[in-house]
Image (cartoon, rainbow, N blue to C red; front, side, top):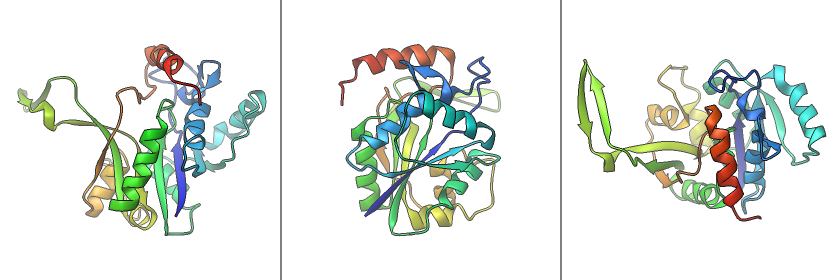
Length: 226
């Protein structure tokens, strides 16, 4: 079985209050995106990596690779108008349907080998695997101005990687774009496929706000060296 990882890096620095997109911010001296790519490189699966990045940042990324002597093989692809279109651009680079494809947020640099390998194994067996964690907090839903308590044990927070058989993911992405498509699972589910969850980790954080860098640095310092 052949494996691929599409790493989507379309975010800006808006919520980070910085002009530098969050995937390029330094985390323990290395851009966040490089940590993310290395997480897949260091897994037992060692997938072919496709990096989807806005065209305007391609030269900057190449410069960062030179500065940090980053040589992990990857294919650089132009990003699209939305995450949906960016993933589709990455999918267009994969011809074979008899493969497994993991789609991953560029700004989740702490994803463990266990999560990555479990995602591929589960998708190989069941067709798809979406990483998720149970909510630790009480949950309330606001509907028509009225808040209603939800059962915490039934609430899952979705992470990445989200891994699929190529033919399934490709057919799902042939659907017209909808604003309801917040991730790959929502696209595939709309196509009519039941989503399979695999266990994630609360340390598999997404870098979104300034304090997330400090949290990630602390967590990264506690991870064992590979």
